[in-house]
Length: 387
Image 1 (tube, rainbow, N blue to C red):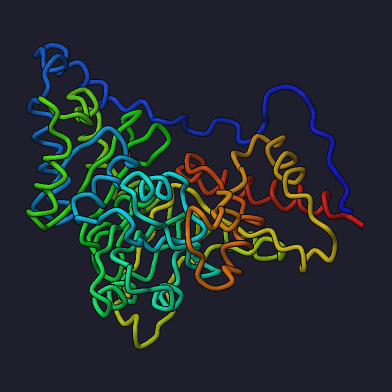
Image 2: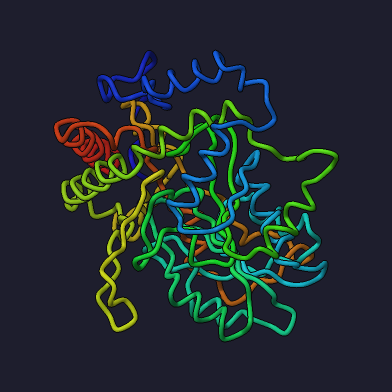
């Protein structure tokens, strides 16, 4: 067994002063003050909501945008908007956010679990292709932990079988996938504005689509005398200025991810997420740009040549003040009464057991702080796995 670090009490000491989240931007404060002064904070809809819709539509090059109370309800509404019926099947990665599984169940459909690519934490196109049955009607695809799903390949699978795609871009606003904004390869895209997200309003989300029929079905389901799942005018007000800074901040995060991954190359028990797609015939477009809400590694026991207590290792890193945690539990152990499994789900099982994820605020820090972060991770690793 690996050695276990004693975790000292007191406040974390690293890094010395990371940006809090959300960042206290002056323009966000001004947006709130303007909404208060104009009385817009008490309206169902107002100018901030209208501007948010316009900004998101332009950013994603789609005609229809529906701001909502959460990304989770947006996934459910996307499925309802696509007309997925009770007892039909929806493909879902066996390693994904729990809310997506529940959204499929909420409409009475049956989740079908498929494996992921081992280095991107996202649905594998060949696994999806093998999982399709006569009852399959849609695919829910998520971009996770800085990884980008192979949307051209998944789009080809969907088109070959006549399936619809819900593209979950909740962790990747502003990312570019083969030359297109994340969330626009699917028939419907989904965003989240939760409190820790790159675009945050504390809560909230949005549905994106170019299909007026999908938009209308979703809107009809929301109508309960008024909209049942709304985003408030105050939430819209704080999101607009954040959108205008998203690309620049994503660029800083991406630079720091590359810097961190380079510095951690000697730490061979931490297998990093793949940032770049390989240059193959199916990936001739070089325009792949990740957005890092989380940054993932796999903690690989075979390289450590000893048993790994992941929870103890995470606690040791957290004792340095580093915002690292374990990943999703995944769905591999879900009952066959709730879902159908396709194949061995080997890589999804490994992801559930081995994933570590770094929270994004530190990725806006200086190169010097990123260097300290890498040193701290390497130091903990060396001490934890000392013979």
